[in-house]
Image (cartoon, rainbow, N blue to C red):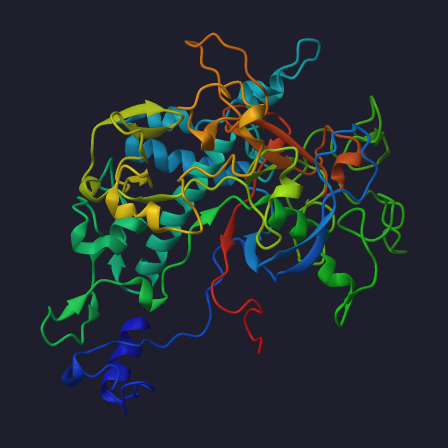
Length: 507
């Protein structure tokens, strides 16, 4: 479709530049290309969430007295998020691909992606059937995957991004199917967009490239970002995005007024359905009280002892399922108790570590295994086989020009505006990096004590099958180390919305 569009543009009446008068898509004028484009395509499994302003934080009593979610008004940009939690079947597809591609030479990549099925074990409960069957038995294929830590969930999002963009290029007739990809020779979106600069062994089995209108270059070219055909990357939603999507307040608006504030993702302060057709039925999968996970035989209250299939119960007004109950979900943010008072009121997020392309690492480098991904031994640069590697921006690199920047001076901004030098145990040491002085993460070698709130701890949101109704309020928040997993934490992916926040068909 893209090739046909460019060919038509090249043969029809030329569109002219408003600022120079020169024709677009005209080889006689140098061949600057402007391709036809309407709107961002909705990726597989995603639902469009139109953004807006809402009150983020506590809307219920703070029963734990954590004081970690103060109410404040924020604005969330439009974005996309998965209709359901990621299923066991989805994760098994990821494991199969990882095993097929990396098992021969990089078996540790597959091992690092495996969920921890032992999270089901309890010292005084018989949960071995879930240990043995929950992930792989077909009876549970449509249930949410659990036992996945934050790093594994993030790696799944990265893998999904590349597979979706590869499929788009196959669908558009640019690439052919290539089931024989192995090791570094796999399709990677960043490598593909880098084109000739990236010495990646695999750029795809090319069926046909796009005709180039550049009179001084080759006759065809690869797809570029300017063509608008490739999608932004899948990722975990931010805490603000997840909470906004969970409330689904778009169903309670008249013009610019929110008519009813919600406690849960549905109206009212109750957990049962008030619709006459379904009156009295539970609206989510949660634990009603101690010892009551599903109700009485003959009339099970939520019909689920542990998790439930991802399409169970009723979706909220964005069409999202199980934003309350079933499993809690990982989000992108690093946890801080006072994030609500520190973060910007537009696209709130804590966890920025700014990176830039490592120019001399477009070829596969030397790797050491850690946390189910691979790191450059010398510079601790995140990578996986076949991926472009990045480094943190630093004052050590003149090309980063941090001394000339006004909006940030450090790469790692996780601790930004969080505490002061006198609050640090290093306050007497003037050489301490003032951007990372508040929290440190202990290692087995250091043998030092450390706080549970540190730069490797991330937020998870929402209630689960093992929680009381209180945790189903979207404003509640909890946290867990990025390397740990649980039988009641899953995840869903999100994607940036680029362009108009209104969406398809909007003005």
